[in-house]
Amino acid sequence: MDINGHIDRTLQGDTHAYTVVVRAYQHMVYTVCLRVLRIPEEAEEATQDSFVKAYQHLANWNRTSKFSTWLYSIAYRTAVSRGRKHRPDQRSIDELPTHPTGPEEIAGERAEIRGHLDKALRSLSPSDASVLSFHYLEGLSVEEIVTVMDLSASNVKVKLHRARKKLLEVLQHELKGEARALLSDHG
Amino acid sequence: MDKNDPLHRMFREAGHEVPARDLTASIMARVEAESQQRVAPTRPLIGAKGWISVGLLTLVALVLAGVVPDQAPSALRAYLPSSGAALEWVRSWSAWAALVPAAILLVGVLERLAARYHAHRTVLH
Image 1 (cartoon, rainbow over the protein chains, first blue to last red):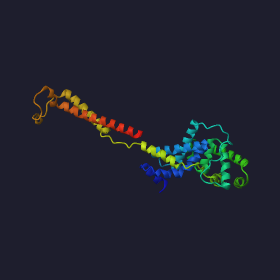
Image 2 (cartoon, one colour):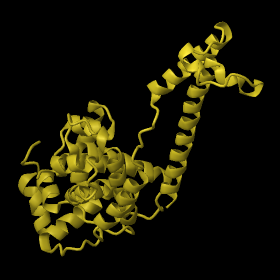
Image 3 (cartoon, rainbow over the protein chains, first blue to last red):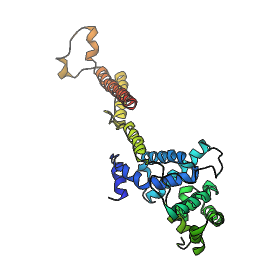
Image 4 (cartoon, helix red, strand yellow):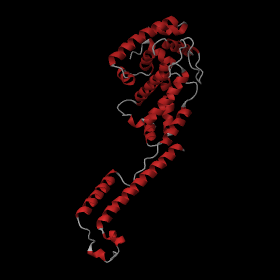
């Protein structure tokens, strides 16, 4: 059964069907929240809040947009709202954990790339990091990012351009070895 | 999106962030609690249209009670008490016409109050 089927079953009162939705989108929602909040514990709380809000308003999802876009929108706004209420401590980028410890072992080059990318994204504003993440990781179009972040299309394009440029600069400075080759091969 | 963009490949290589623990159980616990708080809507005995009808009926009965003289239908006279001031109201059709909708209104109000009390207890427990 596809995700729409599980959403339909949830709407019919089968709460258990929502487990499949949570499992399918948990990491995506967590990533969105972490980009905004930067603190893993806060991102976990925001992730939980996002899924509960999505459950409460599931009937309001008009199927003209993708479910993932609708969910990202909830996650992004929940994280931004939480960020305003629970202003994070003023730890510097270097003091923040470079990457939350996941249950899986992320070995070798991938871990190196992720670590550098994570650190570089933290040097950007939460809004810029989110734009890049939506575009490059989630593959959202400008129109979809407009919906998720409630910005104008021109604003999204400008943010995307500037954030991309800055991220590349930071990465070029930070990366070493194979990870740097990854950038230079294509850059 | 340009698939040759180095950032595209980098983001894809890095993948999603993974929380330190699986959040499914804690999310579903909150969702279950949320769904239990949602009390199934009870269908009231008297709906909106019913309330309007009963209200209009009561109003009409009260107006008619002041205009039309009381006279029980001849077929019923044999069954009604013939004397006694205390029971005189029983012979008044307008009194019955007003009392019946008033009784329905009372039942409706009690039913709503009982439903609210039940919903309150369900949320608390």
